[in-house]
Length: 305
Image (cartoon, rainbow, N blue to C red; front, top):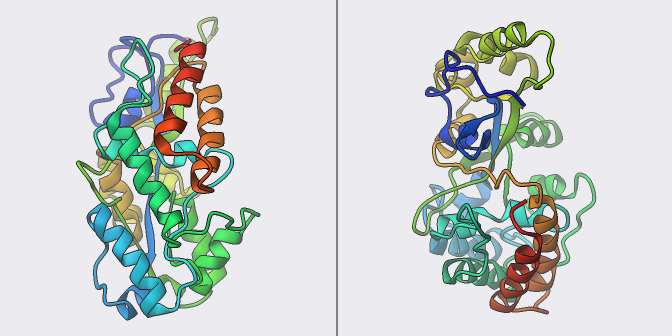
């Protein structure tokens, strides 16, 4: 990919998304739309359980989930991702506990901070607050959320419309979103899509002009209205289309600290090994310390690409 022209500014975009375009010190693209993960919770059931605000710490998250079970009739208090992309979906835990998964020259997966984070993750299953055998079929998590069987989960902005459609009239008043509870900080995953221009492009100048137009605040707000994709340009979040939706506010706040996974060719393989590790951790077949030690060996053999 070509290097982004110096006159195409990215300083008004979410920094985590901009970081995801960097290869070394070279910007290879500009963020187009963004994605992150936040906490979804049933406000009606939370109130039954004695909670009138979202949890703000890891201790509060676990306590609220347990109270949802004991006081509001939930089968399980919290759902965590399983299977494909589950490792990526739980990176908010080590990141929020001060861990880094690589340092630019090597993988750093088995740090004390990461072990502590996945011990916290495992405790939800050992204490019966989360279901290690939860149904992973399409629509299962949404159905359990709407029924109240599992009234808390972590997911992206696309889920808002799905829950409102499934829950029907009035259901939007029964749930809300919040930034992820913090330990040392609150850091979520940053995803989305970038605009790039190939090295051998015959129309590079025009292509970069298109990228510049697509990243104007007004264009970004219009694109959100047409597709639901969240703007990478922070100024676009002030438009009525986004500012009028209270459930989006948490995403805008979370994106300020969200981080991208490493821009390395071996990430997919490392993440797949992480998925397999988490499956054993959630089933109690592996301790987080042993699992991360094994994952570190796998990652070391793959390198950073």
